[in-house]
Image (cartoon, rainbow, N blue to C red; front, side, top):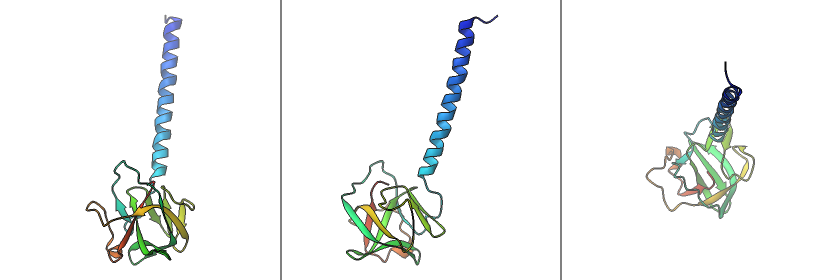
Length: 146
């Protein structure tokens, strides 16, 4: 016969296992939600370094998705290519989903006005993936918070 202490420990152990499993599944779902699924072939991408960039600069302009490139048509800066951290942005149809510092909604379409925190890059790093269609643009913007 089981003692009352043994039964109580077994019940607590089952409850703790269930709670741990629930928390793990919730966390996995939250992490998946932070990583937009979709097409990234027209986006400039940089690897995640674990370091978040400052957002002291602000790039404002019209989001464009043309000729194999995603870029911002900015009155102040001309054509600027935003460089997103990997797994933070993607196209799904005509909607760009972004999980970083976007001062509009989390989803925008080409032609929408956007504001991106970050700063101008001083060249292109070797470990960035730059679509061929974006290479003709001379200005790149490191998107903050991504």
